[in-house]
Image (cartoon, rainbow, N blue to C red; front, side, top):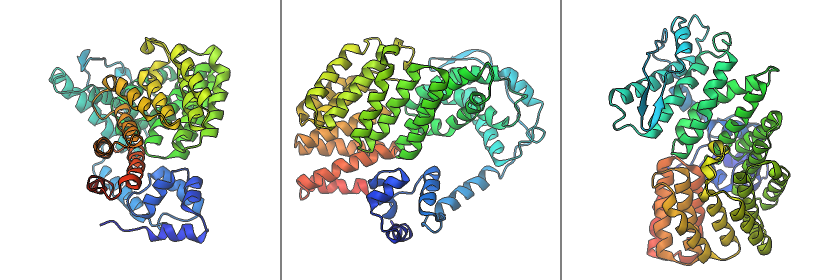
Length: 470
């Protein structure tokens, strides 16, 4: 049974804030804040911290004490079986789900094997959790090897590869003598791109759990003057860009923007114009979902200063972003102009671009913005055709691009007044977003549903959609 959060509502009303104003201060959408008050959703812990700061109240005062209590119960369960030490197996080179697996971190494991967790000074709950994560990763890898890779997906294999070093980083926090900076950077050089791959193969939850460990170690190295500082800053910028994308999927807009700003700072430190341009693109993405076209335009226009030094992949992506933004502002001529530049600049072999590994900008990236541009300038037929043309290039699995395509197709069908098609797309998109745990796409499709209610509110098919949003 859904119970409205009266405490949160009372706190907001006591400050005489509208839902729109309160949501802006917290850094989430008005729809998300509304769902908090209605008891349909609870904030992530990082967002709850921001909420408490804004209202200057505790989680209990805001009606979210159950969120903290649930985390405490998880904490107790994680630590109910303390691990006295860590034993790391050694495996030969093998191939799982098309990925060559090499125990390149064995020297690190050798040192850790002879240093039980207690001796390392890591007796904290975080260390216990990291040990469990390491064991899960090894178990997964062991299963993959014993089965010869049969029945093991690329996503599982990548998650196991990324999870093991992440756990080691957690175990050795504060034990810099065990991990040489060169070893840390070698692991991050491989696993930051793998984290991007995992995200775009539908591993949102896994990336969310593991990425923090990498960012923590990279930030330490990037902030300390040494010959490793530049490389660490470069990888930290790539990691923070991914963290921004992850936060967006939970509608943690403030967190997403903060990561994008950190990515820009590290990109400047690394002296890489490609990183600086892509960091500004991430800032523009946050403004896209906050429906702030003027701030979005400013971010894209700032990125133009780097385009003479960036690759065609990034040039095409910036131009496509400018096309969508000008479309949102009603500047149809400018929108069409930048769309032409985007198609002219964007390379046919986009995956060969060295910046692809930490952006995954592809033909869908351009087409999604092109379709949005057409929706903005009231040309839904062109939008629908654009999305149809790209559909075969987007995987059928619940990956980020597929979820976004479902939402965009719903928007186009609604704009075309095609009720039956809109109902079909909304049903599929809502169910998929729920399964994937993607709050951003779920709330986007809820907005489409609200538009449909305005058009066909009395229609039986539209009324049946209500169950998807309870």
